[in-house]
Image (cartoon, rainbow, N blue to C red; front, side):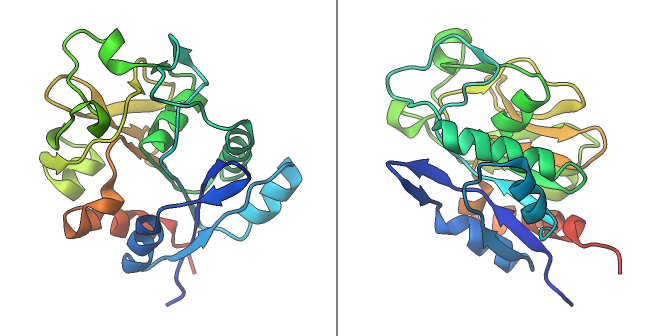
Length: 225
């Protein structure tokens, strides 16, 4: 059976694209063909690239600047405009295909749907615990909503890692919050049509525990024969 071709976005800094190898390993292990994507300048190029893909993973990254509430803290640099522009082009070009957003990627999906993002979660949300290792965060449970796709895949309570300073504030149109940490922070989003899934944690680093999420994503990316 042909492997679905899954595009994986990259970070960008000082003229170099970089991506953690765990993303491609998770997609390959789930039966997909991971393709690391270039940075692009035009919608025409993005459309041609998207025609080669069956799905898209928007990876983790620095600070989201769209839909931002407040100002980014000193320990979180903003996303480079070139990566931001490329992510927008790819998101628009993949409008009919499944997309998985991870950490920054989940926040990106929310912002594109008109939602808002806390610039500094701990400073702006009373009672929020540290969610960044640099600020003393530790792994924590995520509670998934009954009836959600993620609850069916990962169970009602999932042991998640945590690597974020920002967080979703208001949920964008067509999305719903289906996962929360014990302090009430949104940890997962699903679109009403089931095409988009976003998780605030990093499942690619959680091995077999998160394998059902990637297996389901790759399966949804398979085009009908």
